[in-house]
Length: 106
Image 1 (cartoon, rainbow, N blue to C red):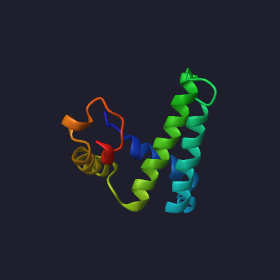
Image 2: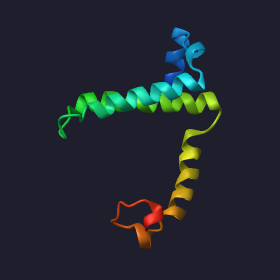
Image 3: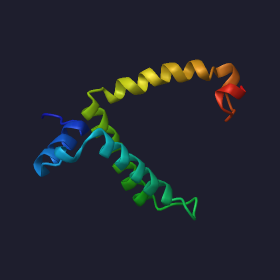
Image 4: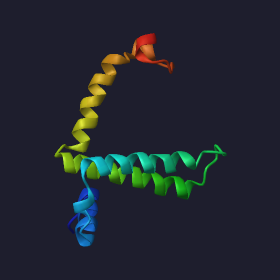
């Protein structure tokens, strides 16, 4: 059995609809912000948001993030790992553990 990745499924979905023409980096970044707003809206008046709606909105955010990474020609997994290296340096465990302050206040 051939396993199809999430990225392959998204690419096929977009190709079937000829939507890549609309997926400029600018449009994808806007879409991420819009969908993130819709995700936040799930919690606007209630900390106990509808789990199904949260999952749908989170999927939309992730989808647009993966589309933007693809459009920019970057590996989404690698850029997250690269950023974690930088963030570990900003937030060393011995100073940041259990604290929510910004790195310059540690």
